[in-house]
Image (cartoon, rainbow, N blue to C red; front, side, top):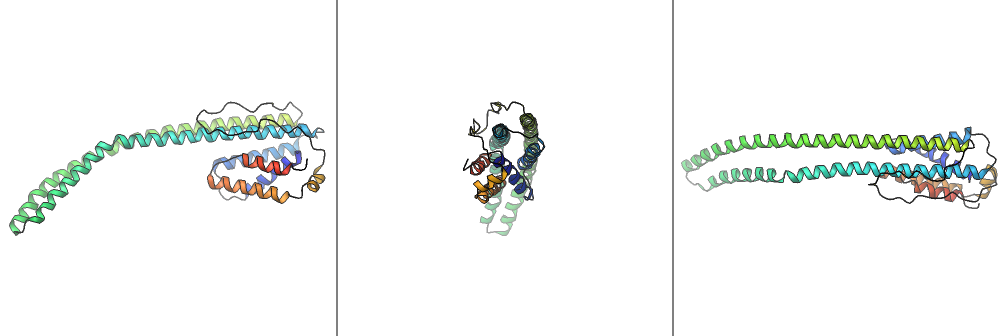
Length: 269
């Protein structure tokens, strides 16, 4: 199992490195996977493969919780901003309706002149209607300018709140990911593996199913035996590439896709 996780991390890092443009979450995930591989390679030799399995199982669970929590928090920020803009648009409905009514009346007054067949009466009608239209256009310009400035200021406030919300979500994400890295390092160096994933998560996010326990069976085969036992390594690579491609298209990470890949790698144990 240890080598299955290592292979998953290496392939995930290699595939992500080929993506020309990384969404923020994918770029961060690439850095975390590279950290996990470096930690595995730099850790002292661990005789108990079950301990290494537990370390990486808990690392994956913790990462999943942190990423899903961040997505939850970020989505909440975006939804709140969209709702605020929708509320502002709804609140300005009366002003928009008034401007449209005054514009339609002005056009209607000018259209009446088309009924005048006599040349003198036609121009007299247009002279009077255009005088009123000039006054209407001036007030339309003044009122619409005031409404624009008011709504624009409100939109700027919405954007300010959104930026603060997103910055806070990213800061929480960075701190929690650092904690995951620290736990992995301690575990690989022989410390106790955490028995529970972090429970703190924003309250407004979609629920996500997360593994709650590490596999109980420890593999006994070395890297060479692993490849002999698993001729379906290409399937594992295909699984990882498919999961990463889907994440790039959706601009949203779903770590359960990588969990399925690790299950492919652990077949036969």
